[in-house]
Image (cartoon, rainbow, N blue to C red; front, side, top):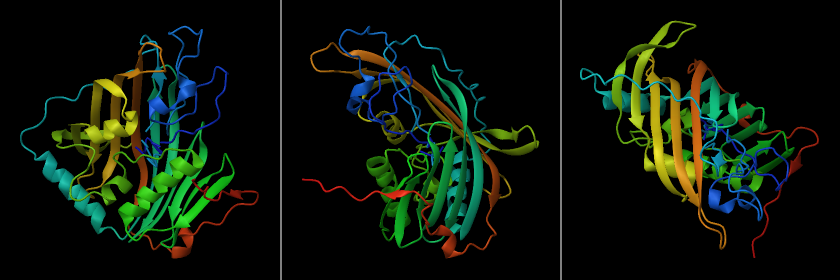
Length: 339
């Protein structure tokens, strides 16, 4: 999910505090979101105002995206069916390592995807993403959803840019020299300067910067060779895993938490060794403290299901296609000096 998120991928926008009934658009961690905490005189069962995170880049997933409720009896979000017992005949981790190696060998990648995101108490919505990548560090990832609008992060090898069409602003900085540092810089600019979190969870960008195994899980289990897309009837290797602490921290910050669900699934095409579908299911309780008020327990739940629509690895991509040309009326946001 494109840590939209992406984003999941998947992105969450930061806006000024509002007294409306709409979800708050603040980012993780929860403890930094004062507008999401109960106001004096309000019932402890008031819903925490939180807007979804969606890029993920994935794009994000990215895939961060969450909603918090002070009342734990919110509308339940349907959970995915539990995968069948793992197969003992296929080495799932070997498949995953082969998949990572395949991404690392790519010179170019052009991919589109559609992610169904679910947030308890809010419902489901779709996020679309388009990724272009050229070795060694040229990236353009555009995500679009009903809340965040259209959002782009990109690097032309010389500079990195984060751009929000909804806010009509962009920020530009010098590009680091390595792909992991480029992605880290883009995520930092997105959050600090634009106000959108871009977390990469089980996305091509996440796989491209992994060493030889995804950071999202320590080990995978093989479920079977299954139809992953009913409309096409195509089959892929279905794998499942328990999400790592890194992923959980990415979504919850340092909030004290009791995890209910933290499952990940992915489908790897047997011919290309590339991921054609990824899915996540998270739920947890956390504790929020506000000044001298008693600690409040909050319930959080988030799901994403990202289906790759098109994937091309044989295209010739020009460097000029990764350069950012500001649309008319867009404002450049300069770096604010810190005292």
